[in-house]
Image (tube, rainbow, N blue to C red):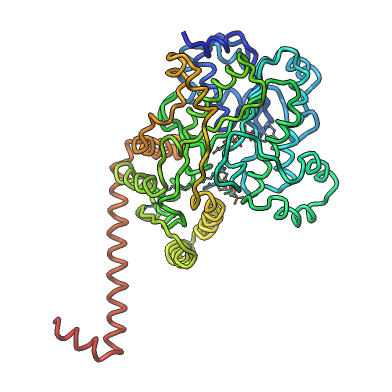
Length: 497
Ligand SMILES: CCCCCCCCCCCCCCCCCCCCCCCC(=O)SCCNC(=O)CCNC(=O)[C@H](O)C(C)(C)COP(=O)(O)OP(=O)(O)OC[C@H]1O[C@@H](n2cnc3c(N)ncnc32)[C@H](O)[C@@H]1OP(=O)(O)O
Ligand SMILES: NC(=O)C1=CN([C@@H]2O[C@H](COP(=O)(O)OP(=O)(O)OC[C@H]3O[C@@H](n4cnc5c(N)ncnc54)[C@H](OP(=O)(O)O)[C@@H]3O)[C@@H](O)[C@H]2O)C=CC1
């Protein structure tokens, strides 16, 4: 019997960010392995004309939860959606709901965050720092609370090369930042943002670092742990391989490459691609929840959930495997044949951006205009180039994350728990994982049918023929112009003929 699964039985669990990528996988695993848990409270904001209930039921009725339905048929009764907006005071939770949360919650998993790299500092501070502070305050009023698990990111200290499982201090105290956001206007915040974030690349990593300091400073007597995942990718094994539902991290770029938009990317092939599957993060999170509640470590432990030091893979290997998978499992209606490459310096990056990204987009938009349609490719390409510029920082460097706590936890688990809550990335076969990831992107993000693969292959053949024809025509035109202007070229031509 799994001790961890048994631990969550009968518990009331509060999850923030349950509608997000990681939150959904966390809920799924909890329901599947501990169907006898009492209730999962999820803090949800109403969105796009959907009620809370509709939002949550849509998740429960998705493919991700198919296995849950078998072991926990009354899953709909075990989830309680609480209307909450983490941007508001007291999260805008009603008095009755607050009372219920405070008096029943046993475990808190704090996953909600803004993960946008370019979010305005005010908004990023509100969600990643102030909301964390408020949640801690709430947690301190929960008499039955056994553990508070905070999800951070391995990149919160990406300004360092070697990162230990400790909370690093920030030059300016989070409390001062929170206070200043209340009275500074947007223009001043914009001005001071680069100075505040210092040598971090964006407001996301900066505010996640501030969030950790808040957890450490304001955790009081709570039993707290911090988990730092690196780049969270599609699921490895559970509930099935390759599940992914948003464009963050590599997923959006895999689509862009598979559809033939992304032709070149500024990346260092030998840099470590520190991806970690979503189910691995969730297994570690649940194990940490159990360990923190049962063993009550004296200090706040930080756990790195990374792959680089145990089972490294680099961007070169990953890129090649992504491209190899497109050969077997192409995406439908590609714009061009997938054929991306890495560039390593500014000049070649600018060159390929102009030749392989902007020029084809302009030509295609011209064709759309000619045929009476609305041009859209240049806009899409600009968006892609913007995304590339945001991720460049992360794919041209390597970091070393120590994993003492994570390894300690692994050895503290029973063999059964090591199996059911496996977070040992040494067992991960990267080639297989990447192939499943690309397949998952096709199935769950693009919602493409496998039956369409022969047609997709045909389409790629047509694109290849168009490519050859286009190049031949270009060559002939250039040659014709050369012959017209150069005696040497004319002589060569007559010699060949
Ligand atoms: C040798 C052979 C080589 C071959 C190469 C083959 C290539 C293979 C591909 C594999 C490459 C791998 C690259 C990996 C990149 C990894 C990056 C990792 C960074 C990790 C750091 C930290 C990890 C974390 O802790 S946080 C989680 C990560 N967070 C994110 O990823 C958020 C990133 N997103 C943003 O910050 C924004 O969305 C931004 C700035 C990218 C775009 O903002 P903008 O305001 O312009 O757009 P949005 O309003 O957000 O969206 C508009 C529109 O675009 C769609 N979209 C959003 N994100 C992406 C995306 N990443 N890619 C593509 N499209 C995206 C979005 O859905 C919207 O579409 P609509 O149709 O308008 O709704
Ligand atoms: N994805 C990754 O690569 C990595 C993620 N992480 C961390 O993991 C955690 C989860 O990330 P991930 O699942 O990928 O992120 P998502 O963007 O998929 O999910 C974010 C979640 O936060 C919720 N949220 C955002 N704003 C509010 C708000 N104002 N009120 C209530 N809820 C809100 C979202 O709700 P809604 O659905 O309503 O928008 C959503 O449920 C984050 O803490 C992130 O920093 C760490 C490392 C890597």
